[in-house]
Length: 170
Image (cartoon, rainbow, N blue to C red; front, side):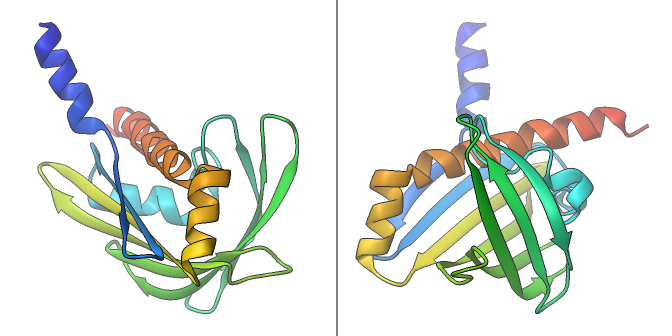
């Protein structure tokens, strides 16, 4: 029984890797249908409930979900510090891909990001790809900000959140 539980938990874990000098890729198999995972990632009533690493909460200030539109939100950390965020949508392929610039109102393009959603094994493989302007910028968020662990935690929150939505679907 323990081995089976361990294998189940291990299969749900996120994976991360550094690509070249400027890129981070984090993936996780989510136990929910692709359309539901997409909805959880694109609607403020959902995304505020799970987005971000452990201990952080979100508040959407505005979301204009279209190419050229923005999602402006704050993340409040465990220390109560409020972090302004701004995402500008560059490309939207419904239920399969989002490409966006991520930053804050003062510096709206700190890095490029992409979320991919692929049906796989009765769920959805979510891939979060981030691309930084330089090796130094990527290394800073990895070493000083904890971007890899934070990304893994964020996708784990998405997995748990969509699992609760599936229970609510008749």
